[in-house]
Amino acid sequence: MDQEVIRLNNVSLWRRTQEEFSYDLKRTVISFLQGKYIKPAKKQVLKDVNFVVKSGEKIGIIGSNGAGKSTLLKVICGILDPTFGTVRVRGNIAPLIELGAGFNMEMSVKDNIILYGVLLGYSKEEMKTRTNEILEFAELEEYGEVPVKALSSGMKARLGFSVATDVKPDILILDEVLSVGDAKFTHKSRERIQSLWEQSSTILFVSHSLEYVKDLCDRCIWLNHGEIAYHGNTQEAIKLYLDSVGVKEYIRPPSAL
Image (cartoon, rainbow, N blue to C red; front, side, top):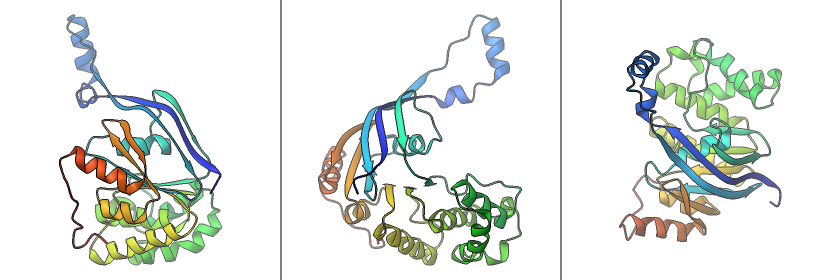
């Protein structure tokens, strides 16, 4: 567990606000010609984030909505580039952040399975041998030749989860994906994650299920307004986070595990 697989040094990220995204080119040009153009605002989403993850570690990331948790995972995965600082990753990553978001909608389910595996470094032939097992786990045996665009959002999520967890990546990035599908599939997904947990996979896990984080994570990062407020003992991180939001005790939901 001594090998370093993820390192973030002084990572900060500024992103455009939603108003800027909706500000189309035509309106921008007109307002500029009229002398009314105001440069849209940017918001700092991450601020001076530093931490190291070693091979095989299981790290929980907690915090309120809007704290920057999902953004942090996207920076680690290379989906977003930091404005400042550096991100270093050793090994292949399977990001379960927006399940199904990376699929080619026009290609068949089987072809997407093969493509996903190839992008993670597996051979086309090996992925072909894994395809039926992945389809079975995703409960999509009858949809192998169907284009992904014809699947429901729940089907795409099950497919994304099944592929990413079947290929056994070096680093698994999880963002609130333990409630995929119905109760039966949720149970299967939790068992799959548990088996990965017991192996040597390195896992970064964002969740609002604090009991699950406490039970399974070696240590924990509490992210608050884009900054690391605490990094260390999982139970202490959860206590400090709950104190900050005025909750003195966390009650395990009946279906938490």
